[in-house]
Image 1: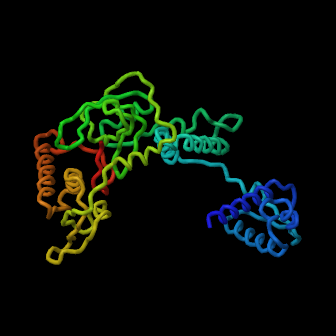
Image 2 (image 1 turned 120 degrees about the vertical axis):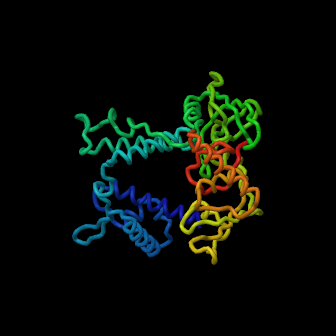
Image 3 (image 1 turned 180 degrees about the vertical axis):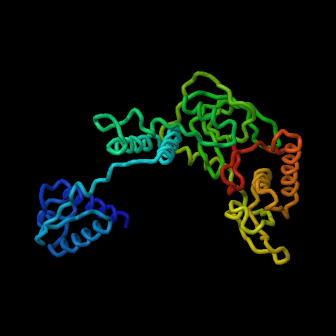
Amino acid sequence: MATTKAVKAERLLNLVIALLNAPTFRTAAWIHAKVAGYGDAPTEEAFLRTFERDKKELRELGVPLQTPPNGGDGYRIPRSEFALPPLSFTPAEAAALALAGRLWETTALDAAGSGALRKIRDAEATDPSAGGDEDGGRPEDSVITLLQPRVRTSDPAFEPMLAAVRAGRVVEFDYRKDPGGPAEPRRLQPWGLVSFRGRWYVIGHDDVRGDRRTFRLSRIVGAVRPGGRATVRAPAGIDLLSAVASSVRRPTTDRQATLRVRAGAAVGLRRGAVSSEPIADRPGWDRVRIPLGPRWDTARQIAAHGPDVVVEEPAELIEATVMLLTGALESVRSGAGPRPTGPADDGVLTFDELGGEGQ
């Protein structure tokens, strides 16, 4: 099936190229003889059936396939109607593209992303409504080039780690593998930053362990420090996202937590729920069962919803959630700001992931 589709796609592409470059209308006989993919038809009837299907598909795709005004035998694709119009972006749209380009720099999409942005800048420069110099271009003031957007997270380690990745610089930091455990010194050659299941990770070569390691940014304690002048480069061909995904421990599904959730609230928690049903004796509340991941991670997701989510079981999750909420309340009362006890804030952008540990 895949081979048949590939052959068909190649034949359609050959037909489009041939008719785009044609100085005049091309007859069916010319297409049969000259366009690769049609000469393989065993009979004239087979060619005509294939050609009719291809014409119909091209028109359904929006390709402006034209025939002579007098109804004669001939086909062409006007280049002016086939080409894309000049591209123009609002400042917000350009900022989004620039942000994506900055993040692609630290992933396997670097080359493809850079090429795509170059093409967009070239197309943007041909838009006469966008202004520019006397040649129609405006590379100096392209909004995609000038804007420097930033990803906002609550992880203090994000900005210095991103700077280290872009500079190819070794870093040192203290890392707490377990929320209640001690922080250990690490020295890392960072290859890139990856957002996986709502959390940010850095992956690279751990000089202390002598192997590839993945670290969750929220588990980094204190400052990220320069670790030397060595130039760091990620291994050729590595898929950073796949590498992080394979190293992050997934939540167990054999244990569950039972929650009482206000109707319409905690959409992220509900997304991964095993079951959800209204509570008969508590109108406006649902009983939701979710997979029980690491205790502190799950407790922090629950605590983020405040009074809209109440833990019914297990007991250790109730204890952890109460500890987080109590710590937050004490911090607010003392004027120090809401800094709950337990593991440091992990900069979760969405609350739909249960678990996920660094190494």
